[in-house]
Amino acid sequence: MLTGRPSPNGWEMEKVTDGGGTIWSRPVPGTPLEGVTVRIGAPEAVLVHVIRRFHYEIDELRMSDVVGWRRPGAVRKGLPEGNQASGTAVRIRPGHYPRGVKGGFFPQQEVVIRDIRAELETPGSGAGAPVDALAPKRRKAATSLAHRQRAAA
Image 1 (cartoon, helix red, strand yellow):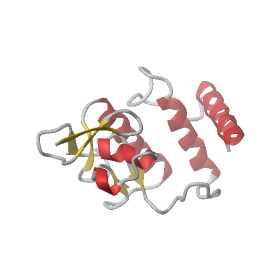
Image 2 (spheres, rainbow, N blue to C red):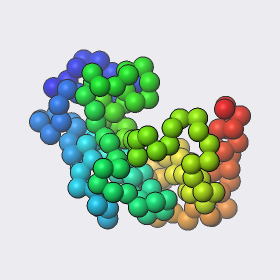
Image 3 (cartoon, rainbow, N blue to C red):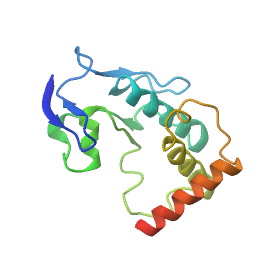
Image 4 (cartoon, one colour):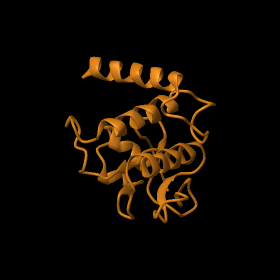
């Protein structure tokens, strides 16, 4: 089951899912997604939370819109997609939002995406808690993230 090799974020990649390892098909409550294959535990909590917020606050997802775990041989291990082989990353609507392309989201959707990103940078007080994406403290964190992203681009 285990490969003995880490994904780019340090979690060990696994060869199979739903077979005694730590990567399982998990539901995303409140969405039509019957199961997204992710690592159980903390990665599951964070990823399910992100998917659920995307579904409710950005755009409704359909059954085939989210891809979780992928075989280690099907991903480029040195790139972020390699994290899918450890069950610690998902792709929402693969191919719809190509890397580097701008203008794929409406401004209000970008506000929520930045809020989700900022929320995940606050361990212990983020994923799973009710949020107001327009609260001044959250807007300040999301705006700060936007400035860092623009500076890095």
